[in-house]
Image (cartoon, rainbow, N blue to C red):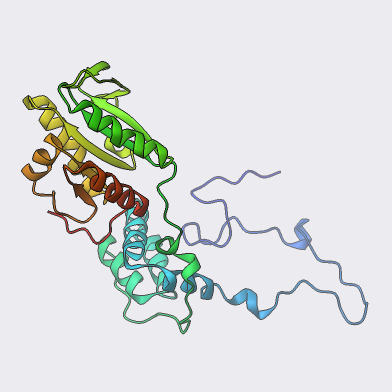
Length: 284
């Protein structure tokens, strides 16, 4: 058995001039045995096997605008990691069979020749292929609750209880582990600190804050909030949390819920969480 060495181990390829290649029959390679049945039995494929792009185009046509942007960014990232400009160009040219818009955007991002023609005659789309059209519920979402000493105890516990009753999983984030005491004697146990938790681990954030906000607590909270905001995630704020959101001017953005009326806040926050991501949000 031969173990081929080199950059690639598949056929066909451009990096190694189509080598390695399958062994010919006279070299012991596979040869289909022809036998007479009602004609000749041969290895062949229908013309439909030559259609490599109609399904991909159907998928592309079905995407929402945010999903298309993600696809462009993802392909730009993957191709941007390649060291071969030839392969980058070949892949971009292949994309042009699906969407000229996609190919041109990726080409500009990775610095190869921008295709001037392309696209597909496929115009069909299916709403079932887009995540934009999936059923949106808050169930199983993981909510990071950022809270410090002196919070409004019973009110915050009511919000947490409502989140749990909506089948979500709130977890407490604070400056240190242990018991966090509220202004009315209520207590919460911290699950994470700012050092052991990250906003990317949560589907949404609920900012409670604390009355006496030192610089570290404020900076860490705002770091979490701004990162979640940049990822289009839902963010809720009550009481001292609202003050923090106002500091970075995101308190009125899409998917950011602020209200000291906890009944209204909880209802609106759960709806925002069910949406999962708020793509209509304008970055600040």
